[in-house]
Amino acid sequence: MNSRESYLQQEVDWIENSGEMPEVAFYEAFYYLTEKEEGPKLILTLSDIKRMENAAINRFKTIILRDLKFANRRSSIFRGLKRAIINYNRLKKYQKKKNRIDSGLKKETGSSLKEYIRCECEDISDKRHYRTINCTREELEQFADELCITIAPEYNDICFKHIPLTFDEVYRATLLSERDDYPYKFIYERDDYCEIVIFNEKKQKFHISLKIFCEKEDSDRKKMRLKTDAIYRSLSKSIPPWEVL
Image 1 (tube, rainbow, N blue to C red):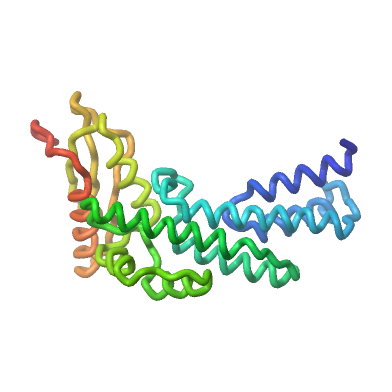
Image 2 (cartoon, one colour):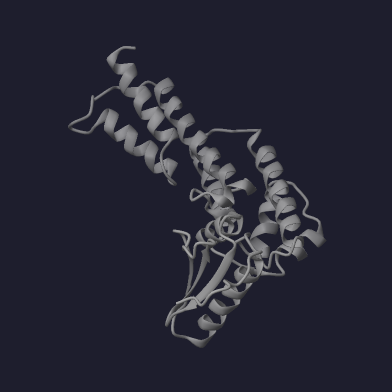
């Protein structure tokens, strides 16, 4: 691989593995390759630019489908359906700007959304008292329309009958619920937050807890308690048989 190709491939790989803003990553890579003082000062061909655009599109797809994969709730990379909707719309705008069309994107995204909703309803029916869908009902219905899929009314009713969590709260609640080696649960109520912790039989706390914060307004405090109660009741664990300090 010659030096020019090496520089280009390095930036393509970087774009495909960048963070939450693939379009920004594309322009940063373009600037580095062509203009930056410390960069290689390449003259990019249309083919080179298309490779970089493809990398940005691939990254968009990756993060959209990441947040539509139900199993990812247990991972810190999860950002939830609201972010998937935002990134899908960003990708559409990016493709339009670049005069690009991806006929398979809508179908793949629609299939992933339908599967997420199926798993969500199944999980809620199994005595979970909160929802992981962090967008509004209207946003979800608009997204489904955009993807040309139909969500059964009973699924919508199940999805939105419980209080929503943020994506970080979803991740932590899922993580706590799946640690069978920590069979005990407890709530600490502080001035401006509640904290849910789990313990093992040696009275040791799990290293990750779940904090639900609020402001000083009464409405926020009520919401904090509702969230805390929903998560706490969803944990199939017992109260510790010892006094918790």
